[in-house]
Image 1 (spheres, rainbow, N blue to C red):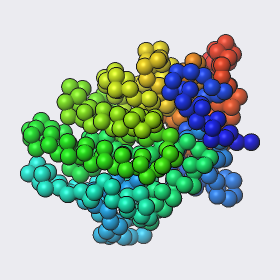
Image 2: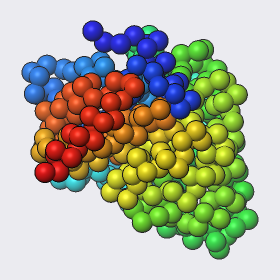
Image 3: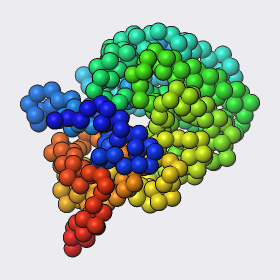
Length: 388
C-alpha cells in the first residue's frame, strides 16, 4: 500500500529539519525516453510517482516572457525548428537527446531595456493549456500540455507538490544566450544589472502568484538555476553575490513567508556558494551531481543542521545496469540520511539510458535499507562485502 500524503509530507519536513521520520524520503524527475521504456516494460501506461510510492514532485507554470504557442519554422521527419515564448529559436533533432539553441531574443545589450514580459500574474500562466519552453522542450518536444492548475490538481491530494520558478541567471541566459550573459555582466554592468533586477521582479511576482492561486495545495517551490558546471562556478562567487544572490534571497524569503519549503535545483559544482544559500535559509539543495565531484555523505557532515540536500545518486551507476554497482552507490549514499537532512534522488534525473529494472532495483534497495533510524552498521558491513 502506498503512503498517504500526510506520511510523505512528514518525511520531507523531518528531512528539512534534520530529524528522522519513518524512512528516507525519495523524489525524482524522469526523461520522456525512460517513461516510454517503463510503459513498454509493464505493457501499459505507468505513473512512476504512484508506481514507486515517491514522496514529492514538481509542477512548473508557464514562465515564458511571451505566452504563445510555439512557432514551427521547419518540420522534417525527425527534426523540428521552433521559436518559443522566450524568443529563442531551437532545433530539436531526432538523433540528439537535447535541443540545440540557434538564436536568442536579445542580441545586444542595448535591447535589454526594451525587452517586454507578459505580466507574471497573467492567468494563462496557471490556467491556460499550451506550449512553454521549460515544460515542453527537453529530450522530446511536447505540445499543448495541461495547464499548471490541472497538473497540480491531479497530484495534490496524494502527494506534496512543489511549484517551480527560475532564478535570475537561468532566466536571463534563456533570453540572451550564455555567451552574451557572461560577457555583458562584465562589459555592460549597468544595463545588465538593471535587467537582472527587472527579471527578479518578474520571478518574484510569478512565485507569489503561484502560491496565492495554489490555495494551500503546495508544499514548497523549487527554484531552478544552473550557475555552475562540472569544475565549478560559471562566473565568480563574488559576481553571483553581486548580481544574482539578491534575487535568490527574495525568492527564498517569498516562499518562506508563505510557510512553504524552498528547494533549489542547480547542476554542476556550486559548492563555493553553499554557505551563502545556507545563510539564506534554503531548505534543500539538489541535485548534487556526482560527476561534478560532489559527495552528499561528506557534505552532510559539513552542513548538518544548516542546509539539507536532495539527490546525488550517480545516474551513471543506474545507467550501467550493474546491480552490484547500483547497490554500492545506493548503500553508500544512504548513510547521508542518518539524522535527517537528506532526500534520495538521482544526481540529475532518470535518463533514457536507464532501464526500468535498474530504477526498480534502486527503489527496492531504498525500501529494504532506508528505514529510519538507519542500521548504519549493516550498511557498512554490506559495503565492505561488496568491496571484496
